[in-house]
Image 1 (cartoon, rainbow, N blue to C red):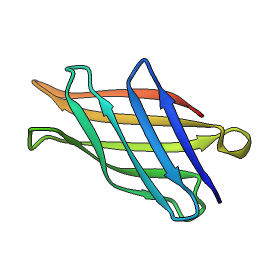
Image 2: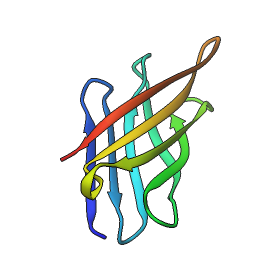
Image 3: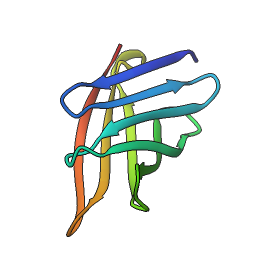
Length: 99
């Protein structure tokens, strides 16, 4: 239960989770400087993981995001993102700290 805000400044990724309401929202800036918004993100039944889509602002491009909460009381999140870029898909794994 409760909520958490997860951040990683170097990748400009921010995720906000409300475990009680079972909602996940957030945004990031990709490697090309484009604004990317989390969309249709769902928490797993046990609320230990999430997955969904990434919408790239101003384009029809769509990526994916999935992650797992780790550590005591879900203090961190391991997140994998894939965002389309010219010539293919860019991916990355990010560790986020709960603030």
